[in-house]
Length: 112
Length: 114
Image (tube, rainbow over all chains, first blue to last red; front, side, top):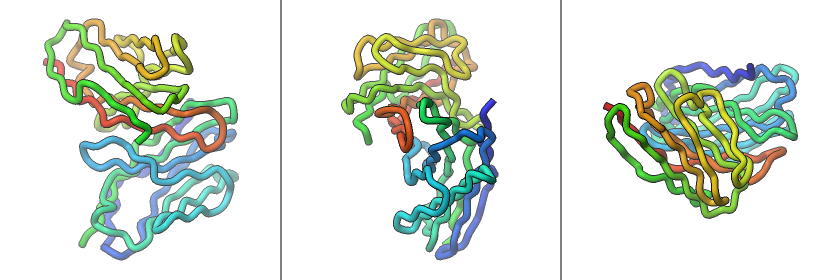
């Protein structure tokens, strides 16, 4: 059973701070990793993808991947109240696989 | 995003009635998925399709069936709805397989079964 684990939160950070969201996965052959943002009552929205070890930056977002530790994280710099949402980690296993396994999500609250 | 339209957006129905949800995409993506999302459970895969007339079961397929007669449409049917199937249903599409192939989601259908 492939598992993706996230701290459910809520994670509260003050406006302007760095929010750090973490995700661990069980399948060692996992190759692609995605972060989705989901506002309350809305659908998941892709914000970052990563498949190589190291960091990948896109604006205020940085995804970090460590395959040896089976760990992927999302950093949000200069957090804004509009970043308040649930963040879902999703993992795809192997080049022949097309399915994603989703974590249950971490709820982030950015306090003005 | 990826031109995905789900219909209806909201539906209230009674136990024992059949229900069909439709997902329509305009991006010619090969893969399509149906999920349900419930508090405490996250997104759970119901059924998926890897091509026209090619479908398979997901994690929570009991009580659901699907059909895909053309690339752009993926239908989810509850043959005899039960209260446990009250949920938010999301359709997702994916262009291909391999590295860096994300899924893109429709706006969801909120289904209430009384």
